Amino acid sequence: MAKRIGKLVIYFLLICIGYIYLEPIFEMISKSIMSASDIIDPSIEWIALNPTLDNFGVAARVLKMPGSLINSILFSAGLAILQTIVAAMTGYALSRYKFRGKGFWFTMILLAFIVPVTVLMIPRLIIFITAQNSLGMQLIGTPIPQVLMAVFGQGVNGTILILIFWNFFNLIPYSLDEAAMIDGAGPFQVFFHIAMRLSVSTVLIVFLFAFVWNWNETYQTATYLGGTMDLLPLKLSTFDSMFSSNASSGMGSEGMYKINEAYKMAATLISIAPLLLLYACVQKQFIQGIENTGITGE
Amino acid sequence: MSGKTKKTRRKSFQRRQDKYGYIFMAPWIIGFIVFTFIPFIMTAYLSFTDVKQDIRGFNISFVGIKNYREAFLVNTEFTPALVSFLGMIIPYTVVIVIMAFILAMMLNSIVKGKSLFRTIYFLPVVVLSGPVMYQLMNLEPAADGQINPLYYTFVIRMIYSYSDVLADAMVSLFDNLSIILWFTGIPIVLFINGLQKINPSLYEAARIDFATSWQILWKITMPIIRPTALIVSVFTIVQLGAMDNINPVLTQIKEKTANTSGGFGYAATLSWVYSLIVLIIIGLTFLLFRERKIKETHKYW
Image (cartoon, rainbow over all chains, first blue to last red; front, side, top):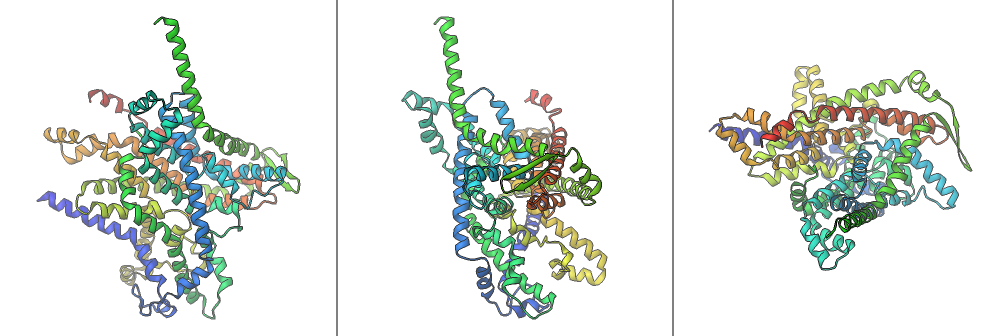
């Protein structure tokens, strides 16, 4: 009996806290379909009286859809693929080879995560601007800096991606490698045909993480890319300032703020939608994958 | 096989290990040296200089501790920002780690609706960070007179009609609570992972010895979960530090970094001081979670 009550209490708490989790998203959805009159009406809380999709139209225009959506997907996916490949290679080296200095590099990989990115921004900028001046080609304002950093394993949260792979490769029995090597496979063949083939689910998780993190990373992207490429999250973060130039209304600041709120919520929903869609599609593999392969790495 | 050939064989084995290990590691090592290690050292050097950018490139001149003096003595914003950063990061981290642990315990103990709840609780992993979260949390400074949307909710309105002070306190608590909850995404994942690795027979053995749930929590679960808690804490500190809406120091550094005309040296000073403080906090976290009696307990298993 006491056990049953305990279970009920747990479910109750989980539902309550789950509500707090989801409340912002519910609010976003309900606000984004409200028309101007609903938004100003203080008696309307959740359900819009005159639901409208106009907000999405305005938001899409300000966000420069669909160009920015395609750009964002290509940009994040490209960086995520590069990051995944490098993380797999690094994780494989750490898991399979006993090279000298391994402990040292492992520590460095952990340290690379702890160092705040802000402390590296200025020298990185100086390096890129100097390179750009001496090479005579445009670097800042193009995706090249971030592509370079992804290729060389210094993308967003690269350490965690490496640790996920390292942890998974550690679970693959070494005898599989040996069997392949006896059959004449070289190190790279073992890597591609044994390790990578077995870690499809891990590759999926790492790619997802990398995609989401690159999607949400606006500080570095804003610094290196500037305004040269329309990306959804970047457009969203400058939404407020852009909006005042795109729309104006004769209402008081309070009413104006609330109406902007509706547009802003619609815009947020648009920019979050690809991530939510992705999560909905691979949610099952994602959750099982994280739980089974583990990223804690003990 | 004679001793000599064995030795050379071992040597060639080691050479092979070195060769392929470093081939696989090469991209990361190059990137680390060029994009992380050199910049890190360079920031330390730049913090003692004045950086001017002209058409030909950068003009770096050594100015001693001028930037540091300016940061701590002349600039009246930096020290308070540091203090409020510490006042944010320590309690937030503690609450997030504890909340994540409790939620992970609860999520781990249920069977029905398990996947539904996990889908909800892992959601922040996907959505968290970036401008999306700022918009969701209405974290923009309230300076422009906007009203916290929580005040529109029914319960808060009801409380507000009794006592506005209580309502204010509730609103700020809930505001922070939802932020805190949204940071628990990956920590919950990590904790669930750690909890699932605990051998169930340990719990069984404890129950046979009439251990209460409370004792099991403190004597079995907590010690085993300690390394995970360390990872979660470090992750949370890094994660919180990167959110500029709740980290006033970061906002200042970003402002100075964006000012390319002459602020680079000074910005380097600020970010160097800041990262040293972050590293110290993480170092203290390591000390806090260092393995103390764990080794002795391991002997008995």
